[in-house]
Length: 265
Length: 354
Ligand SMILES: Nc1ncnc2c1ncn2[C@@H]1O[C@H](COP(=O)(O)OP(=O)(O)OP(=O)(O)O)[C@@H](O)[C@H]1O
Ligand SMILES: [Mg+2]
Image (cartoon, rainbow over the protein chains, first blue to last red):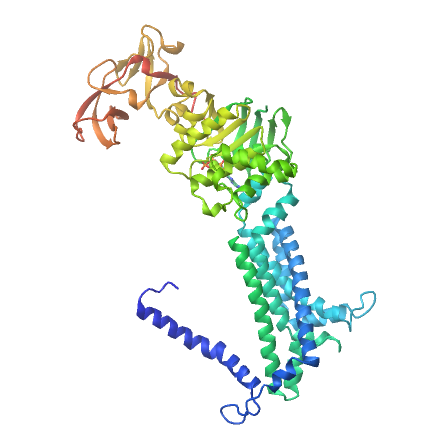
């Protein structure tokens, strides 16, 4: 932060606390508190217990966590490959074609995800593409939703890539494929991992499109949280939510470690 | 052994011609400097050889082979650009090995060739470093080593020294000259806007201005006997005086000046024609003598070992570089400058300026 005087720094921290605590931290604190609560009738929860967590990492809840993790990993890897491929191809296009491609990839961001879920449901509910009722339809919908973000962040990184590197590589006799593999992708690696992390986090938290599509044997964690709270089990829902947050954060931390390694190499 | 040949190469960006039918031949093993002011099209000419721009018309030949429509990686060139563009994610030795790997050199031969190229540029001790751990001059050497490792027939250098400070630059100039003595078969096309670099290094200099080739010749020819006003002022930094040719010499603002070896009509120009007299600043001396010019000092610059005086003579501003003067002349002083007849060159007016 570019604040040098002591008073200025205190003011900046105070502003941060005033904005950050009520907006971001407090709801999280409440969820964490609720996840340990046996009762909550007064201002503060009572009867602390870890029972909700014991239930949250067992049986169907554990299965929901694995389902979410598998869905998010597969969807974000697919999105990364598709998005990077599209972004690399788009970078070679003329300005107008590229702009229409950008707009096409913006669609899943601009359209409400319920609509995306409905669209995927309608499109894949009859032969020859009958995916309705399978786990693939959930993965597919997530991929459609997050590819847009992968495409955008990789596109932005490609624009910033100095063409001098690929030209130097070409002048040294490297074919375009070799340049892509040995120079451009390694230089894009930090952006690729960042995009992957973003896709993963978005997919882990996706609820609205998933609600329209999930089959009984493929229930992601957000759906389970929703059904738990819908039933009125607020505390077990909170415990599941904390598990979801923790799992997402752990994976993101691991990804960011790869990223810093890559950019300091 | 391969040379480079431009055959009426024109390049245009969006209808704007930035290289206008360039005809130029770089002989095998020759060092050719492309010299010109900023924006004159030097880099564009180099990129046409490397394959990063496609000429609107004309042909580019490398070693007698038409490469005009060949992609860059099939042209067999080495190139060093201004920003060096070392791959930041690779160690120095991996950078140098890159071209060898891309050419599918047998794996066992690569370390030897890498070491050889690094040794040649004096960077042998830095093989394990990353580019960001090197100084500008060291990065520049690695960039040259990387280009040389593939043993190209032609080496293209685009202002390779412009990011270095003056002292490092003169050191690197000597290094480049030594490298070329060690690799006499490599043709060098060297882009620069610094006349000292061009004069030091080049066998021949091609002078460019406003998208056109203005002049081409050995450094001595261009410096001592320029053929165009642009060459005289850009390469030799000469004073250009408008004159009328007379029977013996040239008339400048009513004064008759003698030019060239005594008694000869200068360069066979007919008397009465208008011409330009070129005389370089350091060939002017203070005091009375042949070809005296009287004027008033308008500016004095002390440059360490020399004084640069700007003297206004009959409405023309004349630059004179004099050995350091013990007493600095004052502004407004009347002084007399003179020059030897053989130190001046007469150019027919109107042939130049592109
Ligand atoms: N990609 C481009 N698109 C449009 N115009 C360009 C492009 N590259 C160069 N030009 C124009 O072409 C002209 C010549 O550029 P070039 O880079 O060849 O100059 P240069 O002689 O190398 O100059 P410098 O000494 O500044 O590097 C300039 O007027 C420049 O603006
Ligand atoms: Mg240039």
